[in-house]
Image (cartoon, rainbow, N blue to C red):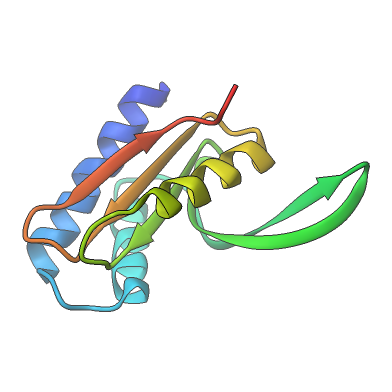
Length: 122
């Protein structure tokens, strides 16, 4: 599946989750629901996927991506009043560390979903 088509499918699934659950739940609830929705669409996704950060060939840190779809797109979920630059920086760092090219930052805490499609620094 092409990257743009994949991200559109993920966004559609996020809207469905948001429509069914509404606002007010924890990030983990939306994460579980989105994972189930993606699975229903036949998309392979992993939850709380461990990612390592390397420096000079040594592992210097580890973080966990909320969801990775088809080893192609990182999804970072939030339940905050509004997305902030540090949320975007977090996802860009994940993309840079993994060398993946597309990330979706999705905020479920608003009446209308707040979604940002991000790409790593060049």
